[in-house]
Image (cartoon, rainbow, N blue to C red; front, side):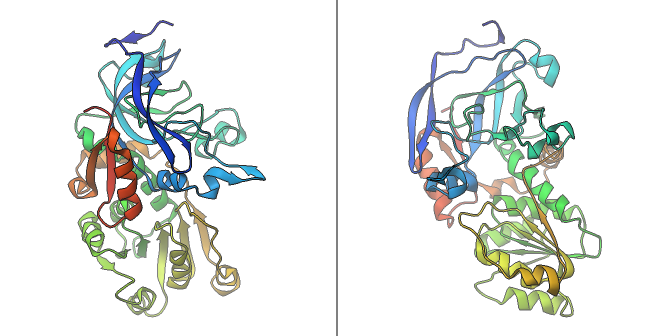
Length: 368
């Protein structure tokens, strides 16, 4: 196979390989070589996402049960938040993606099929036939390795020098956060509540700030994260362990409730909280990947409040916006990326994300 490369690629590389729930191993894996319109990068940094943790812990949507297959296809290399240096280009890849050897690049987390109804309509993030997200599927191995491949159907982006490489790993979660805010359809006089000040929620606060609502409120159980939410642009922060947040928001809105509520905690209690907090005819955006089914009183949604319920999935057309926001320095990245570990310490990273009390964004670096 012929391709353009600025280094001699080795035969094997260290990689974290998912074999099943709580069965992730550091192994030697074959280094990928690019085919036509494919790209190989040497991974600079890869983030550990809350969905990576849920997959690791065996959440049903990833592993299913005896009657249905889950989303994850082991053995597979995890990692869908990443940035890397272009080291090999298959035929036509440089021209197609505007990439050159030595560029810093990332790839949108989903590699669409481009053939299903949704892909043909430009709604590629809802791809029906393959829906291959890096790090979970056999066609799209992820970035917890020294090298990774961007397949020919991928959506790739060059990362400018204005974005520090250690910050560029945050492009994917920020892009997802931007899309969730877009789904909220925020107006200028709105009171907006974002539940959860983790990596995604903080990105939502920063994106919602650009919408300039009348009042932007962040909720979290950790005061340290709420302080970072203020640095991202929140006007007010509330800790549900210290105050009745529903009551507080009702007081702030003459008893009506917030106009927009975005759920980014991943906890079922935050769903019910939001339904009680949002006003009649308000908008509720559900972003989180839940570990278990959530049960709520659907009468609130329909007969009581006639709510607009919007889901939010991935980050369509948001990567350029996220790259621009990071290039402008609009987020306190030194406070958001709290841990940068070597790839061999992946288990420590997973444990940090699982504990949630000492970290916000945990990243791994395959290059020591």
